[in-house]
Length: 179
Image (cartoon, rainbow, N blue to C red; front, top):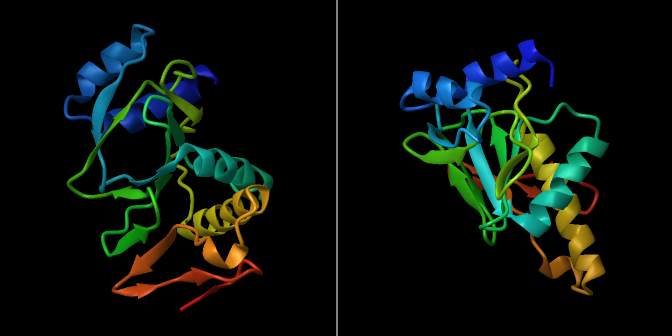
């Protein structure tokens, strides 16, 4: 990560910290710089089980979309995807949590690629986020692949999906969404 990109990424993350100066100081010292960051203003975070999230991250990379930051919590065995703030949305699915306005996440410095809490895809310094549509598609494909590998009938495995205003978007076997 180039120094200017790293600096912009650090400033972007610090903007969501309770104490931005303390976050930046910790990052500049070269440590993990783990701090609580507020969700809902700059991003929301979709958290899924690691087995699903790691495969979805690979699929996002293969889709040639610019993914937003992806955070791995090895201790909790979860992966967090940074999405645009969407106060009207929820995400549903087994083992899925959606952190938005009023929620907080623990995040390390943008250079942190080691330890239990680390970036799989660090912030790019430009505020790039994964689109909900790309996220749904990646989760759908990952769910289908995992079901196939474990011998689970595809019709019984439902991928995490976004719900808007009490309606649900489902992804069919072609990857197309419908309501």
